[in-house]
Image 1 (cartoon, rainbow, N blue to C red):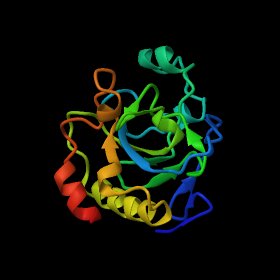
Image 2: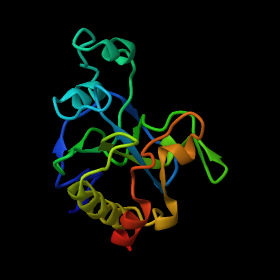
Image 3: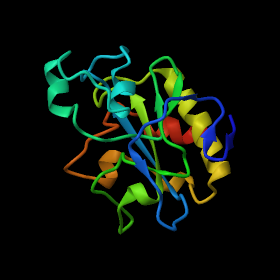
Image 4: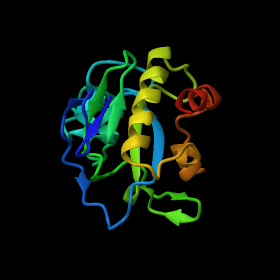
Length: 179
């Protein structure tokens, strides 16, 4: 995998309107998330539509509550290992919300967000870990300020507000694969 001008060559490109310019800051943090829509269900393309502001509010009761939200992630890794990119890595995606890492607020300003198709309490697929490790290695090459110590979960930068990627995420196995 290779990153050129903020685009991951192995990813399918589905642009999201939910992004902005980064302030004059280097990309120095990777944030791991999870998402499934409806919660606990996989496939169906709902995550992709959600990040493109095209989620059909009438297709599931949960969607009515979130359809108007404007959020995005840079990358999404499906259960199959397929990678989708929504926002150029050099731009600011809207994935972290109110957040702080090592005393520094506004993680969206200096981080890359990767969503794994999953939920807090269901194991992730082996292929997702494999692809996540490959993507992470490419990110660390392209953005050298991202080091293993600067890879974190949404739950760690927004404690009490977010719980992902949750207890089902195997941090030790993942970290072994990126060193």
